Image (cartoon, rainbow, N blue to C red; front, side, top):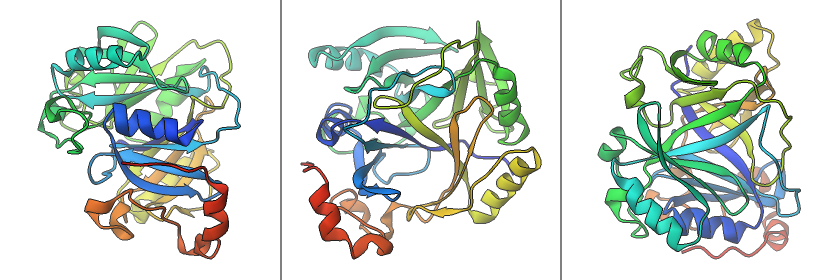
Length: 319
């Protein structure tokens, strides 16, 4: 029944070109899919990740340029982190400073070196040095030296008034266990894995941190996280997790076809929208792996509207 960690994180951006220039250009992530929000096809859905868009590496965006600027706080995911190889933060500090990106200089948290920064819309990001990241392939796109490149998601931070019910969801349904605490910040990792009880060796895309005692309600909008997705191996596994959630009183949506994975959604006790997403079929079902992100891809049920959709979308220049 347990999840295998994070599948992806989806956030809200403003201008799509500015978003692409920051994540693909400055941070060096690979654009693995350019499509639209299936529920609002007037807006892009941009997927960034490793060279194949593997689960646990993917950050996606809805660039709703007309949306208000958000304010991350209680009931929201307030930060997300990327895994980089040990020693990479010195490179990133110099690179970001040269591009006049606001940042928090490296510091220690849960036994690892971390630095904070914000994207152009104000989304809170972190780069976290990880021993595991050193053994993972980089994006291999020539924009960032491979020895310093972002490898994957590291984790996400949730802000809660009362962290208890959310912690129970993580440990009682999603297969996590409490690994460490620092003040009002609590770290949870998948139970029973090689990282269990070993908070200095957090696996990529697996860490969930909860900040307790948040007092102000967050406001959705540009620069905030829209939802956080956890992994299911397949639809059978997804059904098992969904049944466990329903048994505990959660309202879980019907399965939705997201073309590259299948999804169900629910809200955790503090209000954050969560998703359970299947690992497959993956991003290579409509593009060759070497060509991922090269063209605007639409599902079959939107293909007949391509001309109208393309006319409504802002122009996006990709490398």
